[in-house]
Length: 475
Ligand code: ADP
Ligand code: ZN
Ligand code: MG
Image (cartoon, rainbow, N blue to C red; front, side, top):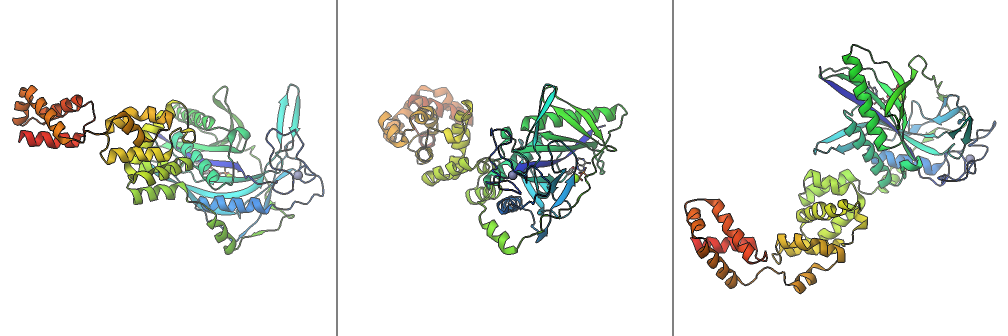
């Protein structure tokens, strides 16, 4: 029997505000001295009064809008109670039944070019807990992270493979960064994933029983953990076993998940409305104000590149998803006036060279204007595509102006058709047999003749012109 995975992700991103969610402690905590960014509010002292951070709410709304979410006019905070040493209040202030936003979507593009829309159930806000460090026999607690603002983005169970889940998570990272609502740096703990995964026989409508794995903190772990968990579940079912609804833990070192908590032992969070934080009333005017601050997003940009420039969906997405790459493309295109060719040169030649050296577009020595000029030289027939590719590495290294470079090296297309005609004539005379083949209807023989002429001109002839001359001489 063939099985199909069903995956839903809950992604936490730290909102990049200046201060924490409910107090005015600094939210810049990376590498800070433990417990140096704390106060009675984020330490959960009795009688403390939280005051919600307006910047955090606005940034979360902005991110939600970028995910195409609806923003209801009314939402509220709820207490989510559980006991843990890094949670001195005894509860997180989160959102339960009335989240800040809901019903969004994220478009992903897979390696094979498939484009798929993934539903976003909701984006809500909450405060983070502190952090425990186990050192030998003792455990240390750092409350710097306590009370930092999070947005939790919950997906619909629309993902069907580790690749889709990873692509979705990467897309989320890009979007929250695009709108500058989270730095989403996983090495700094600013983005974490909880995965929910089940499998079902292919063709079955109902979902299988899901297992949850919490707190994955890299794309690598996300992919490896999903691959492992999907395989484990399929093997369990194939061996006649059953999947338990449970929370499992993942270990990067061993590469396996282990059961942590069954459904029966699942935490009962006893959600109830947070009495110390008034409900959030979000006016339409505020939503529209925030919507204006959102730049053109990758998806819209990709659609525009297809409509306006006639790029393929694949190229358009590749360019649009990285704002620096998109900016480079637009600048080069302004010079070349050849969007498709520019995209080709940028994505294959330049990116190929950069990737080989583990560099990004920001590291490119060649300016966008010079790439644009090179494309234009080829398109105007000043140099051949072959020559352009040959000189590309040198142009790149020197960030050379292609026009000057070509002039200095005498690489221009042989403009003198008289001379070219002589060369063509010579080739025809030397290749009598090929000519006979061509006249007998063999088009490949014609290709061979063009090759001969190109060789004789060291590639400086324009193949189109050679084609025309040869056909004229042979007709
Ligand atoms: P819970 O009640 O366990 O929190 P939710 O319905 O809130 O479950 O969903 C949590 C996450 O699990 C969401 O991302 C959702 O898409 C995903 N999910 C729900 N059911 C399944 C399933 N059967 N298989 C995989 N993922 C699922
Ligand atoms: Zn504080
Ligand atoms: Mg839930």
